[in-house]
Length: 461
Ligand SMILES: Cc1ncc(COP(=O)(O)O)c(C=O)c1O
Image (cartoon, rainbow, N blue to C red; front, side, top):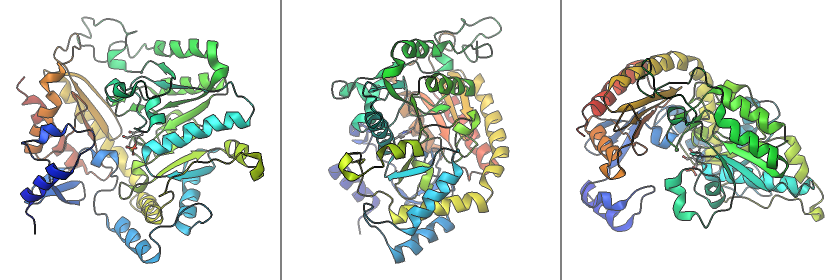
């Protein structure tokens, strides 16, 4: 049998990891994960690490949860996979019924795919084709937000606003309209720091009049009837920097676009399934979109799966005799996979049996008040959070919010120091964040915060 070190050499020889400059691991080893239990991951020497980013924002109820595991195992005895065109199966049907039940009224149709990018791609394509079917052929444009992220397929990238990810593909992607990010910490409309608010943190937030929605207002007045849809992540721009923004922004944006009949596409791939403290982030604003994109937490992180949920109105625009050419010719091989459906149903069962959402509220208070103490640290420019998510934006100068030069690799230092303290941290550039599994306990939250504090305060820059 190969030792861990042999395997790591084979990894160097054969593998190419996502979102990774492989040269970083020319000498350093990747973390070799051997197993998971609850909110911990273990390496092959039995060293324990807190999975503080929920294995890329997926894990909800912890690793190796007995109910989810046994549901997948039971399903394996029955059916592992079947194509989903012309056939169906019990798990996919029951899950669709549960999802329609859980989501706001009006979201009545479930289209499955297999990852977050495809969940968004499906919504974009459906919206585009819907307007063709309705004879509104001028509606071709899409709006998205700076710092928004919807995945790495070409359509999703075209509506992505994270420059570092998209700029190599500028000429490959299609044109769309981009509006400012509601990035309160770096709000260009905000009053300058004052004596009372010497850091930029929070200054101007209380009297925010949503000036950052002005460009949307103007765009709609000019082109509102040429727009098919707008896509955004409700309340938390995750990959764009864990940017938490006010509920009133989301409500107002929904109102503005509905005046022009524009499809509202909410990407809850990261925020869905309890992460913000409600089952879906949209519930904080009491809004109902035309499309809701789900993945990651849909199966509690056990098996890849995604769903795009839409209205009967959209569905009915495609429902016609075949010869009318209204079919949605789009799909993915692992659509509605039976093992994934079983995992998703089991996860929803865990939500009920373990009373997850109710139990979450005390944990969130401890977590969100615990992060406030980080404000006093010398390099922490902003502290923000929602539900089980928190971010600490590290800056060179707190007064001006000046960022560290990228070559400083502050995020990389945090990653390495985190491992030494038993934390898996994976900062987005210099934004350190925690994206905790819902099953974390209050004691564990306190321990994670203490360890994170030590990592950040120990930085020698
Ligand atoms: C909000 C959001 N949308 C879409 C995606 C893309 O999901 P995937 O990586 O499964 O394609 C992500 C991934 O991080 C995401 O956070």
